Amino acid sequence: MHKTKSKNKERQLIIIDLDDTLIDTYSFKNIIFDKLALESGLTKKEIEEIYQEIKRKGNKNLLSTFCLEIGNKSNKDKNIFEKTILSAVKTIKINKEVLNFVKKTKGDKILLTQGETKFQKAKIEFLKEKTKIDKILSDIVITKNDKAQFISSKIKRNKFIFKGKSYNTITILDDKLDLFYDLRMYPFIGLIHPKEIE
Image (cartoon, rainbow, N blue to C red):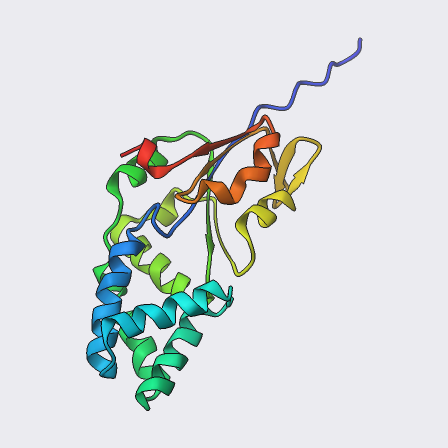
């Protein structure tokens, strides 16, 4: 008597963005820019221009470089400005609708965020403290590289392979869906903007 191989159970995965998806980074930046202007003696407009210029150049150490540039313009130590940003993390607003959606969604959950490690870790620690999200996440990934590239690198034969697990269905929850345009060719990948949930 031959035993038939059972089909692999369909595995689902949701990949969740942090900034402007789970947390309101846009409002947070406004608070930070005000605080940095006050501490540095520069105007808020000057602070915003420094930030936008560094962002435009695609610097992978955006916030460290940002603090360094503010320090150079104000003749103050960049560490003052880094401490200001890190201490202000406690003022971040959490998107409760997105959080509830993530909690209710079946399957494994990965928080995938792009940015400078120390600042991303501070935001994640705050989120864990306030929401206990780490209890429902399968993994947390911080990358300095492109998130779409990270996801693409894990696709093999129309499946997403991550840490020994194979996923047949992936949902990407992100506020910048245009970054994932090339991934639309895969029928097993779905995209959701946070505004679709709110």
